[in-house]
Length: 243
Length: 243
Image (cartoon, rainbow over all chains, first blue to last red; front, top):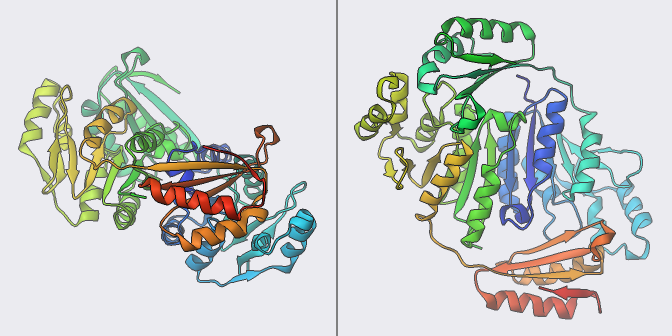
């Protein structure tokens, strides 16, 4: 599966249960709509060290990273500084955004407001109609605001920059338990390691099945092949339905 | 703030939007109920390398880690192996759990089912009344099942093992914008860096305020001191209410 994207939600408020994170689930969903899966989704505090370490981990796992939060003029907005550190770049003040901050805030454009014009050196500014502040993008890291209304809008700005994926999926609902199907799954998964197979047991009898097995691949051929091999190898009669 | 816990949600199904993660939000909430905040909450795929790297990152940030998922007999259940690798421990089969698997599954206790008896060498088994399978705990890593009903129950088993925290919080609702309050926040945050101060703007006019400022500390004294200093330094008349 293509997994070129990682998400990093930056915010003490999520980790301390003051707010429920809406941006992470939205990111997962909107990427999925485009055939993309996340390689990692991490929520971290407003702490430079924690963000640096997590960006570095995410960069080993994904070509593109979307961050949420920590963009703003107050002391707890440390995303730009942390991302710059993780990328080994300096922080610079961009005259292009400085002018926009002055225009937007007018007489409330305090010296602190100018921090909104800071960016990792070499950052690209990605604009969308109707929003005065651009998305900062640098080395595949897209830095989005954490306020959910703004994140939602700016995520669409970013999605246009990401490659589209394709994804074929199949789901098999089984009346057998995991111990009874594990050998068949082993055999197919080991011989076709490039096709992710998931096994999800449920203990809720009202669902009418015991395990849901999922198969995914960018191309339909490998999905069909895995399903055909499982149909032969799984215990007789255990497939309730195939979707 | 005491942040001794990190959470790792292991599951392709969450990252591909097939299911919405309920375990992460529950972990955040139940820890908060006990005065504890998370140092990190990461969702990773069913991939040994990704889990190893994330466990190692989490161990640098937190004394205790709760994992969700990847506990089971199928090929995609790799949590025990990955956690053992991250801890530099071998995987061993525990006769105590083997006996329980045989008793629980009866004639469905296939050789694959016995994988449920695998654990990092030196793991402690944490039992709770009413559940036959214990929580595996090793070097502060608690490995919980991902099925939400089981996670919810076993989380309570684990919570009893964690220290309780205390937390005093205050929230100030302001009519001023972030650029207007950033200087006051800077001054107080810089002189009292041990007291986390959060600044959360909103652009929803119906809420009646522009920024919510939060102050947190295990002890009430520092919270009171920060609030008192902010009351002096913030623009006159901008505090709408204090909670």
